Image (cartoon, rainbow, N blue to C red; front, side, top):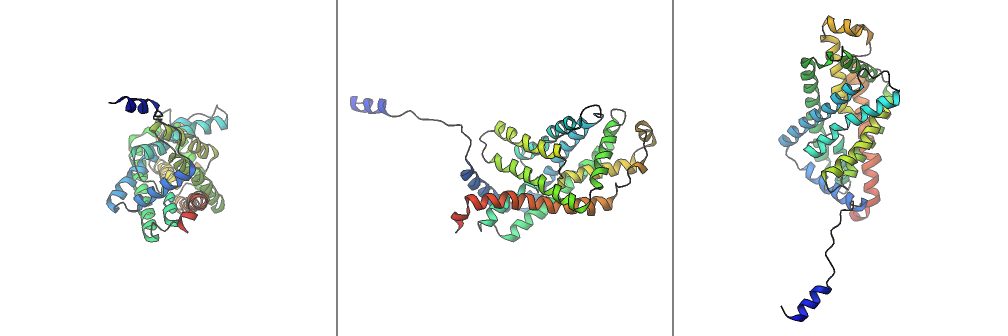
Length: 296
C-alpha cells in the first residue's frame, strides 16, 4: 500500500453501528410489508400457525388463571397487575415463536389501505386466523380440563376459572363491545411497537406493558375468551362432586355461564370491538399519518 493510501485510510471516519429503535415512519413501512407477506400466506400454513396462536394465547390464560387463584387476600389492583403480567406470555409466544393471531392481524389493514392487499385476501386471512385461533384455544381448554389442573390449590384454580368465565358471560352487549375496542387498541399497539424492535429482548419488553395493561383493566380479547369461557363451561358441566365440595359452591352459583351467553353475549360483540379497535383506532390512524402520501 502506498503512503497516500495509508493516509487517506487513516482519515476515513470510523464505521458506526447503531442499536437505536426504528422510528415510527419506518415502522409503518415494515408493518405494511408484513401485512403483504401475511396476506399472501397459503391457507394451510396460515391455519396451522393460527391454531398455534390460539394455543399460545391459551398458555397465557392458563398462567394468568393460576396466578390469580386464591389471591383474594391481596388488593384488587395488585391481583390484576400480576394476572396481566402472566397473561403477557401469550403474545410473547405468538410474536417470538411465530404464529398468526387474528387480533394482531388487524395490522394487515395498513397494507390494505395502501392498495397492496385486496379486500378478499384481507378477509380470508381474518377468517382463517379466527378459525384456527378458536380451534387452538378450545382444544387447549379441553386438554386442560382433562389434566384436572383446575383442582389444584384445593380447587382455587378452578374457582378462578369459573369466576372469570361467569363474569365475562355476564357482560351486556355495549360494555362487551367497548371493552373489546379498548383491548385491541392495546394489543395492536403492542404489535405495532414490535416493528421498532431489533432484538428478541426488545420485542418482549415492548409486549409486556400494553398486554399487562389490558388484562389489568379488564378489557376483552375474543381469542382469549375462546379459552377462558369454554374452560369455565367444561368445569361447570364436568367437574366431579369432590371439586364442588372443595370450593363450597355448586354449578348453580354460575348462572350466566352458558354457551349462548358465550357465543352471542360475549364472543360476537367482543370480536366486533376488537376489529374496530385494532383496524381503525390504531392501524388506520398510523396509515393516515405515515403512509397516505406514499399511496396518493
